Length: 528
Image (cartoon, rainbow, N blue to C red; front, side, top):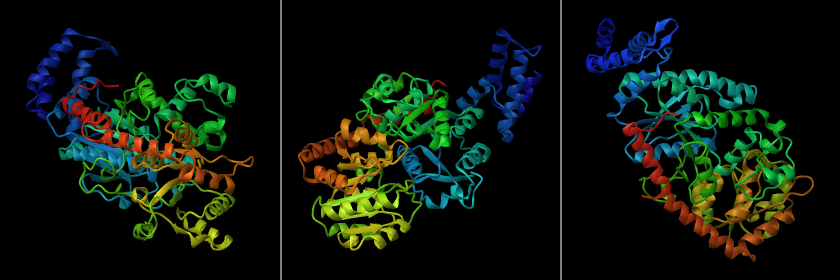
């Protein structure tokens, strides 16, 4: 009776529930620390109600109290908290997912670091800050990659918990935490509060499969060609150069490899594993991954304007860490013939050596094709100083809206590093690609672009590791006006239609998002 009275103090309408729980505990007594578990459970329920009332995050909730908290949520509006990693290629898909949810009448809140939050322009979703410990300068302020990641884990966990408490106090409790795959600690925070957790994979299902097999010991380092041929079922025949750089050269990127392995080990703890892909693109691999984890495809996560037009005014990701030269790009493209322009971009993170830039520049110049090249400011100056008249046929910009460029009728080819976002954008817009992968998952993506999806070609490197100007020229001709041009363009058009269908009403990704929301509303999703 004392326990019931204590519960009623904090939840006046909970009498019948407490009676039910007391009866259940009497029927199933389990001893724990010399006390009947029924007594411990009931006291913990009282404490958890106090924790919820006063939002004390340090109190760890029991399984029963977590279920109770979720049942109280079922009749409230679903609220999904999307936790981002502060890099352009990671922000884009998670912000786009938040917009997809908001378009389906779900309350979506994006959590971003203090340093990046002003670069995000919310419209249909809310935005809240969390800290990585480097609020003034972000990643550049950290002394090392390891120091940054450790700080983000420590400070980010605390500030994420504080944000969840804030929402609990405001009457908008979080139903699910969706987080970037580099932030596996966010899953632990969600579980502490009894909240659903969903990880967002920011690479392909194929790459995820490779990392999982490495984690299982099926790909032992150092890898050799014979090991590869025997150890990667479900994937096309791979060479050593097709591997993600974190596996091919693990000592060069040890911090990132450790982070990825932590992610792989965390996947089973999640209620959902979201893959920014679509079933038609990687059907067999997605099917295989579903046997391991609760994987669903929800992509391609690109602004709705370029695919299905379901979200009004959704013409950009709504986040840019760099100043764009969009008007200049589009005016220049407007002056060029249909499908004549080569668009060149190596993403926001990769740095290419001066020698490689010179080889690419001379290859573009020799091709006599107009080109638009997105390059960092210092690299732009190096090129202009070292190569006379290189800008006669080309336009250099520091950043632009890549989707606007790829969608422009003047663009006929995309010279890309094959980051997963860029690869999906090329596929979604139906633009043939010349692949010049640099690191991370890019070599594997390039393999699929050329040999599986057949929407482009991969430029081969010489014995010193450079793509020579002659090789680039050969690839450009092959894509723009060669024997494979018709086949490549046909495949590109096919995959664009598949991408549009996947995110349109009733498509595979659209259905998966609807099912995710339905399970949050009904509370029927089984906890991991």
